[in-house]
Length: 172
Image (cartoon, rainbow, N blue to C red; front, side, top):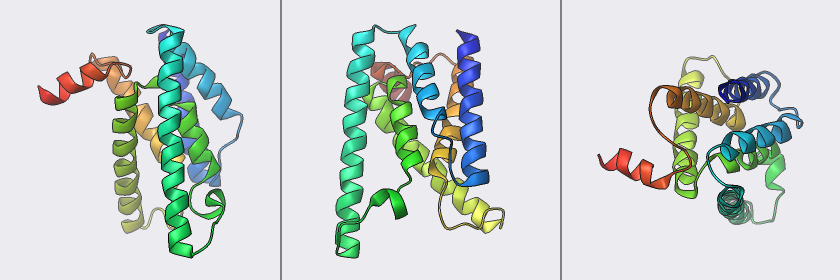
């Protein structure tokens, strides 16, 4: 199973590279990542739990897309295609790809932390004049953050599939 996790980390790093270099990610990486994430998760929990987690996490993503749509409608006074200017389709596909990896609360926690990480790294790179584009390569930043998280999990006992473990870890 360690080989599959290493391959998944390499896939995440390749997504990071593509998003930074080309401002786009090859669509084929997302189904490969989704299947790999499912394999990684299936070793730890039953398929019914994977399905439950994936559905709840997908509903959370759908809610986020609805919020972005309403925000853009209010801001621009018209309904816009959010994937053309506000949120990349690759960003959405990345989030769907990682749905099986997390329990619902861990997914929300990852989502918030990865957005904060993305904004921080973007601002630092912008300040250092290393990255000058106005569009944030969100899927790239989030995949890099997830790669760091996966590498960290090799060294600490933590499960992305157990909400109680997160509470225990946070509350001491």
